[in-house]
Amino acid sequence: MLLAVLFSNTEGNILIERFHGVPAEERLHWRSFLVKLGADNLKGAKNEELFVASHKSVYIVYTVLGDVCIYVVGKDEYDELALAEVIFVVTSSVKDACGKPPTERLFLDKYGKICLCMDEIVWKGMLENTDKDRIKRMIRLKPPTDV
Figure: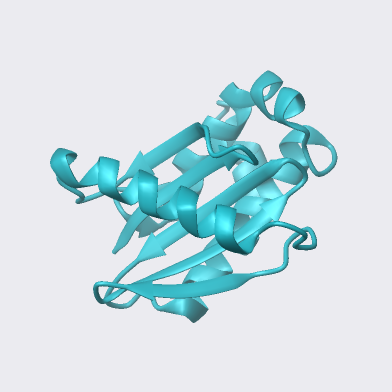
């Protein structure tokens, strides 16, 4: 299961978070842990350079894209390789929505579109869509067409 997808700025402020199957009382712990992990390791990292960590039998893959840090947390079948695929789709969708690696301002300007992308990529803790063109079609809020 994908437990969380979280976006923060470089100062550690949460921009978007999606938790799945994580009790409310544990979410603050995860927010703090992930932001600290990013603060310790993402300074000076290249865009889309992947970092991997493990904590309490879950896997974490995280990266930086422009001024935004992206964290994906999974367990069971979502090991580091599966999470690398998830984060690739997420970063691709964010770049498409923003037109380039985003500044924090651009990310917040495209907030609605990015949230729609996230809803199409991850549904109830499972990876739903990885096809970039299909995600683009789905977020236009029109019925999908056969290609």
